[in-house]
Image (cartoon, rainbow, N blue to C red):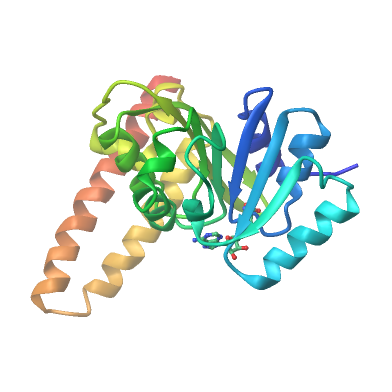
Amino acid sequence: MLNLSQRLLTLARLVPQGSRVADIGTDHAFLPCYLVKEGIASFVIGVDVHEGPYQAACRTVEAYKAKEQVEIRRGDGLTVIEPGEVDVVIIAGMGGSTSRDILEISPQVVETLKKMIFQPMNGADAVRRWLSEHSWVITGEDIIYEDKRFFVVVAAEKGEKTPLTEEEIQYGPLLIKNRHPLLREVLQKDIEAMQEILRQLAKSQNQESKVKVHEFTRRIQMAKGLQEWLFAAKQ
Ligand SMILES: C[S@@+](CC[C@H](N)C(=O)[O-])C[C@H]1O[C@@H](n2cnc3c(N)ncnc32)[C@H](O)[C@@H]1O
């Protein structure tokens, strides 16, 4: 029996029953094997661009006797998936801008999908911005705290074009709307990281640094405003 981390379990719970799934950047292929063994997905294609993870994924599929329902492919993102071949795509454990670039280079595959699930390691804003600009509606969001780290999960389905505010792009429309219990801690961590960047930028006097100081000052104010709103809502 496969014991998944809370992070991977959260992704698995967002997959609709009976879906055909592609797990991009599958690495060990634990998630594909779990999805078929638990009867959640009918078929999963696990994709990895690197030889080591590709081989590890093949070994897991072998070990869990999942060959009939899990296929491992070596390749870059969605370029090894045919349009219409899957309903759901999962892109987890990569940067937000890498996840967005994977969508950008395969529009013909993306347009045939029903749902996409992301767990960006950083830069979730890049994913949310892309979704809002391409008529994908964010239908699920979560924050998981595991191994002393916060992991953000974003799920989206096709819909109407939904403009998001800058706060929503940075911190998640549903995390804000639902006042996710971990959002205040995520904001605090983000504020501290940005304050440290400001301290480093203060040592430099060039024009580029001044622009960045302005940008980070604005973002800190935005995060603090959101923190205050969350705090006030709790009273
Ligand atoms: C940190 S692991 C994440 C594994 C798994 N998805 C998870 O969340 O636990 C990232 C994996 O993505 C793979 N990867 C990175 N860029 C990729 C791309 N463009 N296409 C396919 N796989 C990629 C890496 O080789 C690596 O195995």
